[in-house]
Amino acid sequence: MSELQLAVIDVKPGAAMDSQSGLQLLRPRIYGAFRAPPGPKKIAAIVMHPTSNFMGHYLIGPLAERGICCMGLNSRFVGNDTVLLMERAIQDLGAGVQYLRAAGYEKVFLVGNSGGAALAAFYQAQAEQLTASQLPDGDPTHLHQSDLPPVDGLALCAAHLGRTRLMRDWIDPSVTDEHDPLSVDPELDMYDPRHRVPYEADFLKRFSAAQKARMDRIEQWCLDRLALLRSTPGAPRDQTFVVYRTHADPRCVDLSLDANARLPGSVWGDARQVNYSANAMGRTTSLTAFLSQWSSRSQADGPTNLARTTVPKLLLTYTGDQSTFPSTRDTWMAAGGARIRNVDIVGGNHYLAGQPELIPKAADAIAEFAHAL
Image (tube, rainbow, N blue to C red):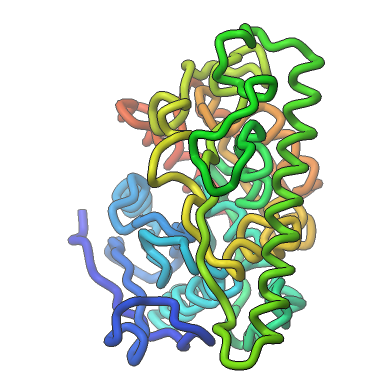
């Protein structure tokens, strides 16, 4: 197998301070790792997540063995989504696509793994028709069509529907005080032993409605706070805040809901402990980042964007996944229409952790799809 190579890619600066590093701000760069198979440069893939470090992704080597150069690419927000703007993340992804095109690859496709699926769909939708001229807070994105060269296909695996839907499904509605992580309404606490599994339909209905209500309250507070900041002379244009308890999906403990072959718990372990942890999904965010990633105003909804794309699409469903489910698959398939097909990776958990025998199956399916592009 070819050696792992490093890609260092210059990117355009953001409109705000999106890094604590002065060096990164003055000379913004992103980094990727790839293996280039010997022979003609026929086809290459990028696997990228908004924040996760994918430079060691489990598909890089297996796809190279199957004749596909695969780059695990990091965005400028790797490891920290506090100020992440999805509109800036697709700009970084576009720089990666340009890098591979300039290297001579005839075809380039995206592997959207986990939260990278909605990112890939958002990218291609904007590459085919740029509509994201403004951020959800109203500021210009400064995106140009040349920043986003279209790719030839999308392969999605263990694919979330997008950060806005994920937060809507996971946020804990039992929080009664946004400034107190221990505040709780036991009537809405899925972890309270009084609510037995399987959950009653009435509880689930009230739970879901309260999740939406909490999301709506936070979103409106963000909009009101931004309006205040931007109408106050000398005030900053953004600020950070904390969203407590963002891991309360009843499917983590009630396996009868959206049933698949998953084990109880979450992809990070005990769901209740993750819910109360100091560092979890969306825990610390800025006003603008919340609107771009997590809110109903986000432009990065996965299925909505996938439906706007015209390229061939592949969906790999990991049937033992604790955070994507049969309903997730059905939503992606409906959005993909006639140009998407599904392949089940039977028993696969979200990361294929401890399942080395399943990685070649995923790589085979992606390689078959890629060589047909």
